[in-house]
Length: 444
Image 1 (tube, rainbow, N blue to C red):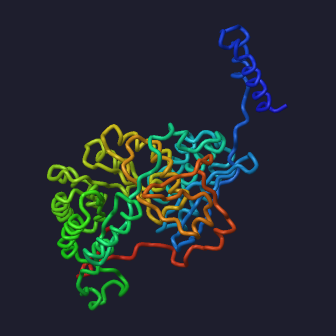
Image 2: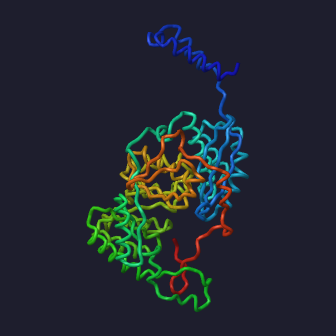
Image 3: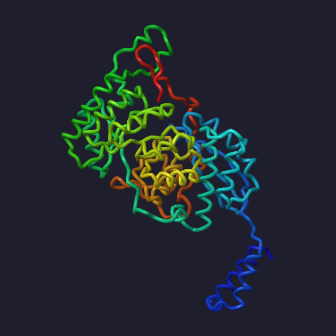
């Protein structure tokens, strides 16, 4: 007889003799000691592999962790749209042999040992690979418990996840119309952009192309037109739609730090819900200067993958929302610790949630959003019919809220047959250069 079956029999005996246990009899003590002495059969990891798919042309990487229990597996997001092939190699060639044979139960131990197994750590490729393993283990844990993952994190703090939508246009009127359409769909929070990041369409023809510098297809933006126009767009949208809709904006680190400070101060009068990423991560020192000059809420962290990047900003109370991409920091295990740190310093969550997060990653975001007290807002995903075919169980968006199903784990699956219909694009993935008029590279 296996030890796991014997253990269940002893536990059944304990249940049957519950009155003795309540009375504190010698029998209950003996039974308890018998259970404690019985070894368990740990659930073993038998395989870790990366699955790549691109239903909407975006390079998604999902990790599947298989176990010694037939049919029991977990899924985790490892999507790094700009370097998917490197992540796939890291999962299949390094994490798989490292994790095989280890207990799937010990998530914290596996995260810590896998994290240091490369010696050097906190890089985006290895963090995404680690995230795939980590999230998949949480998915397995929920399935074994017969509970959604948010229940393992303490249960619900809210009935659903409040989202913000992405609106924009080539001028103030188009942007207003775009915002209005999302408000009519039930969204109360809308990010506004004037065209693409930095309002590139406002810039003049770049001289670097005539000079043959870079490549003809390199993108172009000038800071001046963007910096002058964005306050006017906020003014117009506030004047036409009033104060009920919450407005957000993403600078995307595309202007000089001192220019970003001036922009945030100008936008403050329009009461943004937050202004995102005013500085590049290399310029974190400017946040202290910004905080001293404005009360405008600030969100930061989309490009972070190292705790040293966010710890001082949170403990110094220099930001109001932490915006990390969960797979970039290594998965759910570090994210829930980050949320706990942020809560103590009045910083709310606003996890990164664009199209280059897989539906598995979006589901993980939502489970954490439901369970943490200091939830702020969630960047709203969009699930096409193709994505829903590949990933059955996608969360649902209704009236500006994200609703998950109540299935065990993350409640989402991967149809590998459907996924195979959508191979990665031939382009391996990278950001195209964005340049100023003279050809100087703009840092996102």
